[in-house]
Image (cartoon, rainbow, N blue to C red; front, side, top):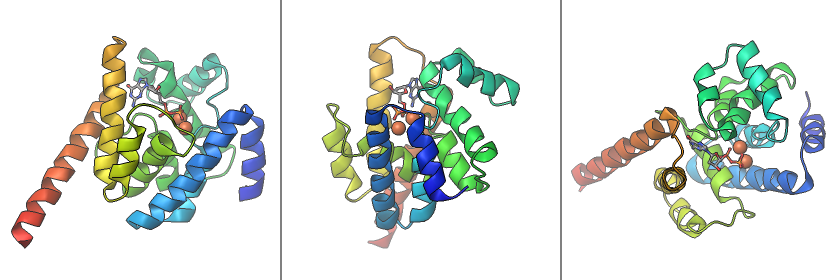
Length: 197
Ligand code: DGI
Ligand code: FE
Ligand code: FE
């Protein structure tokens, strides 16, 4: 499907303020992709579709997960996690997205995963810091994003994990794997800088 047709269809499936969020994620994803050497066209496409079914009924999201063999362990965790996997399935089957990198960026935009690709990171970070976002540590995330994709995303996941801990909620294992993976990458980057000196 053409970009404009995808945009029109996605817009129709959400309230106006969530569409404004999506536009913010599109713009931020393009900016971050250019800043960190990722493909801005792929980043924008993933951003357009990332929350496509966020406002669908949760039983419809769950049905996609159950019917089409998506990870069923998601259903044991917070419903907020479901729209990302269901959204990637819709992107592929209804919107004709074939690029696995784009599909993965949609699929993992909420939970993250171990060994996130550059595109995964850009879309996930854009979702955290688009201009419409306003939560206590968003300024810290935006500051880190000036120079480090990994540090900024780590600040994002730290905030989410703290929020889940405070609420006494379970944490999806991929989120912990994502945070650990970012720490390993940052340690490697620091070690590489040491040997350069
Ligand atoms: O869809 P958005 O609101 O734009 O953002 P999102 O897809 O990143 O969803 C974030 C919500 O998901 C946030 O309120 C925290 C919630 N959540 C629940 N369980 C988990 C989780 N987020 C992560 N990363 N990991 C979880 O286990
Ligand atoms: Fe989302
Ligand atoms: Fe979002």
